[in-house]
Image (cartoon, rainbow, N blue to C red; front, side, top):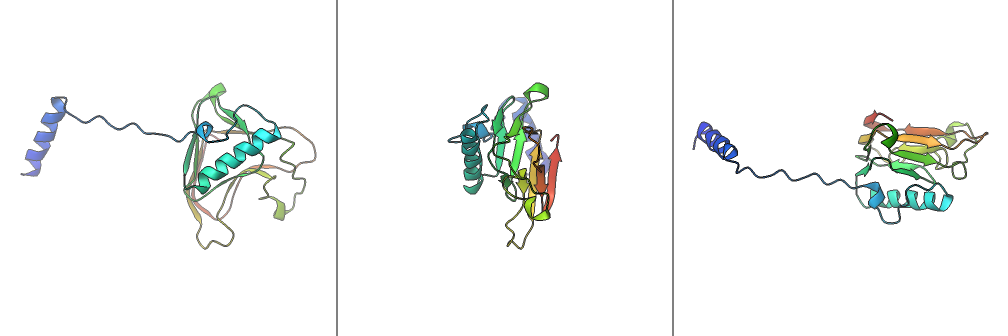
Amino acid sequence: MSRRATLRMVAGSLAAGSAVAATPIRHNYIDDLAGFVPGRTDPVSAAANSAAVDAAFASGLRALHIRPGTSFAIARSLVLPSGGTLVGHGKGQQRPTIVMPAACFTNDRGDAGSRYGPTAAGIVVATDNRAAQAAQGVRIVNIALRSERRDGRVLRGIVARNVVDLELADV
């Protein structure tokens, strides 16, 4: 069968309504993770959230989505691996928020050695220091990152090292 005949047959099928419905995209939502506790900023809930996200990425999951209006605390840096993605859904007041509680993020050192520490940055994009290849294709989109106020701390929202193709949008 010629290419033109194949295209006519496909076009005729589409016109007749026999097209196969597109499969809906299934997102892995962060608040569906086992042990995840949204909406609370106490250290126990924050630790549970950090552990849930770490476990998801350690299991090989590479994309986590956050539903509109979701707010959650973390107790230590979220480390995004190569190909890791965090995507928030919702605008304005419904934009997802990650909270860095003062009780958990306690870094008080400004030296270069402390900037990637687990209590110094909300999100760390990096490979293992021993890895020969850079992290690639990391995306962080439409997320608010907020820290509780407390004097004397030295914090960073997002840090990245040894990364190629990093997308930061609406953060």
